[in-house]
Length: 431
Image (cartoon, rainbow, N blue to C red; front, side):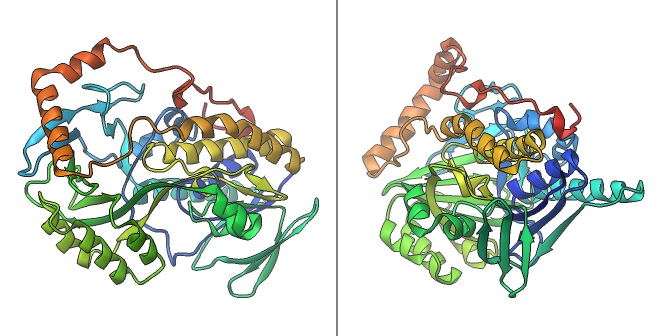
């Protein structure tokens, strides 16, 4: 039975779900709304892990994604003078590395804006083909510059939605795909549940782009500084260089800056990173004029259930694993795939589909949120010295490569890759 569905958020998860729902049933009426005034072409580098690649392949979008691949050839840890201390290779489709474990770079790296545009364009192209072939009913539209002001659940009948401009409309299902600070989650589950589900990891991160320098190559570079600070830089042959600032210092002041004007947030990050070393001065200078600056707490979202009534959450809104896991994009695709699959399989019983989605997602969410190793950044100059010299020694002697070659592949139940992806022939995908 065709459904009238509202998807809140046009990041990765929202458009992926819209694409899959339309493939499953072209008669669905799907509306995707986004607070931004247009599709956000900005954002930093994303990748696929474990089930992410098979899902994109099933969607028939793998070649289009590969056409936008970032030319990142690996990663290295650098010292205060930019000297290479350790170098890592590329993780392939199968999950193995070109050099050894610990690789930052995956076989398919793509900029967030490019990824979202590929999915949105494909969903619009699908709709156009349906209309040109004489298909009647259904529809898909993206609406920008709007948001949800309120929702009223009607038991067994759907959801009445009030938009920011005062307009009201009823839907069979509302999907929150609006990120780790989801307004949909707060609105539907309540402030207390939403607050308790937000698990801080004790770190802050800021993202922005600066102009490429001649020294910026195709290797991602990581730099550790005293006072619990670190910098990750990625270029991949692009005109702009991505900068990630990680900090476990000046926490309260940084947290207090969120929600304030961007200029005030930048001032706090400049205060925190001044004097960190390496090329920090260049990055802080570039930060001042960067128009894509974004900062937030590193956190995970852990809810007792992913839906309430006819409102359901996908992606970071429902189960953010955090950038520390590197599985956020993959988790978003898994959630979109499973939700669309269960809605198609359980049709016309929406409530049963939401219950099944909630159950199926428990295992992949748990596995995606596992954080391996110590997430603490070195606080003292001595700790930084030990890390830098330890990495240099291990890399110079080849000890790190030898150890990784002797270790068995990690394919046990602790790895997301060990979770079998469900098959949903009801989605009418390529495979």
